[in-house]
Length: 244
Image (cartoon, one colour):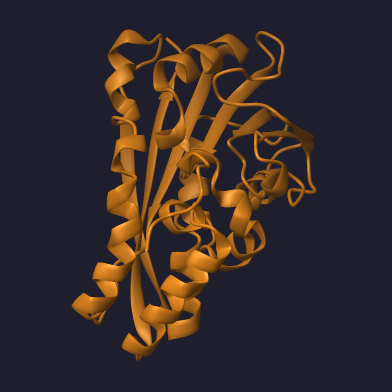
C-alpha cells in the first residue's frame, strides 16, 4: 500500500486532529513544574505555546499563567485549542511583536521546525533573559512487544517518509543566541487496550499523512495481530535554555 497523500508530514496531523486531541498522553505535570521553576516563571508571565497543535499543552499553561498565546499553522488543529490567544502562524514566522513574551514552550513539535529560523524568531520575540522549554514524549514502545508482522505494517509508512525528517534541532543551538541546553527526564507508564493503542498509532505523522481509506486499511491489517493489554512506558524529556 502506498501513501496517497502529498501533505508534508509536519502538516499531516490535522487529518486526525480529534483523535490526536483525545488519545495522546497528557503532558506530565511534574515536568511542567520543573520547566516553570527552571525558567523562574511567575503566574504573571506571558508565555507562547509554539506549534500548539490542538492546545493540549496550551490548556496546562493557561492554568499556570495569566497570559498564554498559542500559535499553530494547521486549521483543523488550531480550531480545537479554545483557550488563550490563538493565532495562525509558524515557528519560522511568529505573528508577535519583538520582545513580547517571557517564555516559549514547544511540546512535541520542535523537530518539525526549520531550527535556525525558529531559534532566530524565538529570540526576536523574547524579552530579556527569555526562556525556552522544549518537551518531548516517547510512548510508542510496548510491553509486551507487538508481533513483527504488525510492526512491519506500521513501519512501512514511516520508512517511506524518512527524507522529510529534519536533523536534530539541537544542531542549530551553537550558532544561536542561547545558553547551552540543559535537560531532564522523567518517566511514567499507562496501560492501554488494543483499540487505544491503534488510535495512538493513527496519530503518528506517517500514518496521519495517509489518505483516510489507506490509514483505515492499514489499521485493519494490524488489528487482528494485537491482543493486549499493553503497558506503555512513557519517557518525558524537558530541555531548556535562556537567551544569553
